[in-house]
Length: 236
Image (cartoon, rainbow, N blue to C red; front, side, top):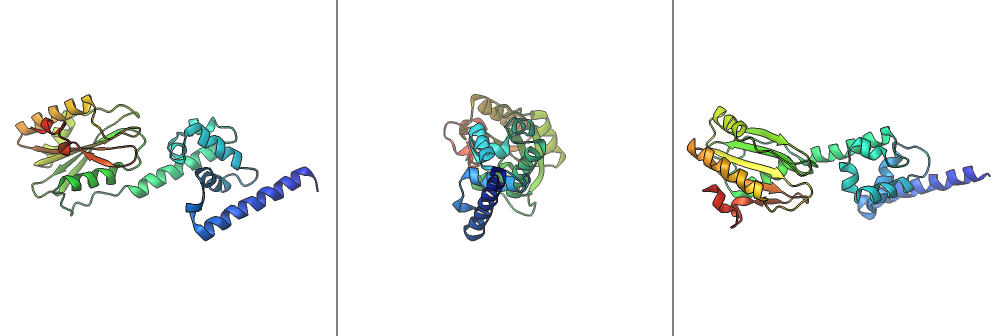
């Protein structure tokens, strides 16, 4: 048996052993690079995907980093072609979509915990900074969701006019603002504070209350600015 055939048999055996572990224990027993290895089995039918998986983790830092990466970035890794990159990107998008739920307009959102849950349900796993405004009626029912802006990893823009038009258009009495910090904590920046204060003042003139501004951090944990002593003053 030549070296190529021997190598093929070793890799085939390894793939089956990985599949057997998943079948028996689920993914909990696999390290991040082994999960990537398993995914790559389905798009790279032959060869050693272990080295490719290690290179991906080394380049992007984590499994999440790999699945958040764009196709051109993935294609820069040795052994990753366009089809493999698109496959990994799709897996990441499917995961994010499965964790995000549509707003149920029958539910009443009345507390800051409710607002936090609402923000996480719509911003979970987002890799780019995104700003949303939820327009509610007096009972706490969501009447409209507005995508205010979608930026890069570190920048966002709060379009006050867009939010006001959306709130007026559905006769909302309450607005809840939400955005994410994909690579940071839930602490509000100076620009977050200024934008929140400006929006609160504008809405108040129109007899609409800005009830909260929720920040979702890189770990998908929600932080209510209204409940932060250092930030609460911007709502008045």
